[in-house]
Image 1: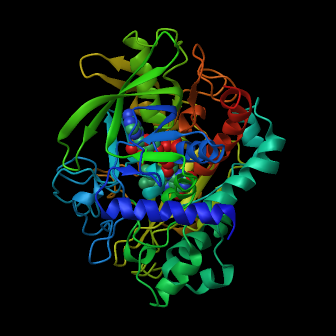
Image 2 (image 1 turned 120 degrees about the vertical axis):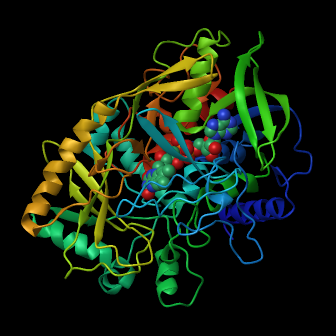
Length: 533
Ligand code: FAE
């Protein structure tokens, strides 16, 4: 067994037993309760998980603080997560009704259900004209996302992060990220015959007839497992309408890859249901965190302090940005500059649906995991559109797309002292460039096919939805709020590791970029900062 496999095995056992015993501390070591650690990481998403593994493997005792819960304990019926058709309290972070991305179908509110408030896995954070979907729990966004593992076009990467060495990223860190994440590819022959991908083939036919290229999209969902799902050999997950509220099977989320290996080093402890509220710095340079502990029902169990020599922010674009905006504007980290809170974008996200002809059914079975995209990135107004499922369990006559566009608009976070939160300044008009770009592509497809948009999916009569994003990026941009490796400007031993480093856009689904950048940054930080001390 390789060292990595051994660590993963140990870590997965620790995660499962902690979940089974209802523990909020995950560790392979019994004495993991100290309130000081050489390294603390806030969050357990992609950037955080990479950082934890590399610190742990280098022998640095590390504590991860995660506000969500551990999701590694299937109930007696075998389910850990609820599906999209009958979501229960596990679906949503402390709301009394679910808030599904497709707000309606035939203008009816069929997707949403009343639920009890609970530490559920998907959160929708609202800021007026913009809502942001994020994952909550050990694994962050990896628990709820569509698993699409896409590397950006090199020319675009060089444009958005011109001071990052692209040779190093494309030669070393993107391949490393994909191998660690367990990225795999759909078998094209099976794809052509699978009932679960008929929806994608129908969209592909329309795209090709309008002169657009399509491309298969790599995934961290196990396509072999999906094949067996279709053959009814194993319990269904992607083929049982599971995705945004978590997958009970098949998905290689971070708790099965990076985080398991991190815990398996013996040096990494994860504390769940622990939200960091405040960061201060003592005169000797130690960072002190105020941590609020809750139970799964949201009762506050207490507020305590945790201190660290090296502090890594991996709370995602919203979470990390909020912590530093608050710290700056309440005077707790007064040296933080104006770049903190700036450069936030939606990755140009716009969702839309097309109405298919009666003779072009997509069938009742749709895999929750996309496997194909329309690649129109070479146009003057680029679009990369994931062909998205509507896993409703019945014929929908709909083709759905999540298009990623090159929208230059950016938002800024400001601290609201009354609410004690960072508020995003983003106007609905800032979504218009995304709509314009998508419209040029899909108007052409509709005109060649003689089809039209769906006007019934987003709660009113709009055909294009830009009021939410799945891909929040920026807020603490690399080379602006930090140096070129994520070291926060103005403070030693304070680092950003997550999607907030990326300046608002990657041109593709972002988690491979976040992972690869985190690998690159922690390699440098370990060599130059942590090992030196
Ligand atoms: P993230 O994964 O968001 O993790 C941050 C973690 O920090 C979370 O677990 C939070 O609960 C936790 N946290 C936040 N604040 C605090 C605090 N104060 N104290 C303690 N913990 C805190 O960060 N991307 C793709 O590449 N492919 C896809 O197919 C895809 N599909 C998506 C579908 C959906 C529905 C959603 C919501 C996202 C999707 N994404 C996809 C986006 C992707 O999941 C996202 O870019 C990454 O998860 C961001 O990684 P970070 O490391 O930035």
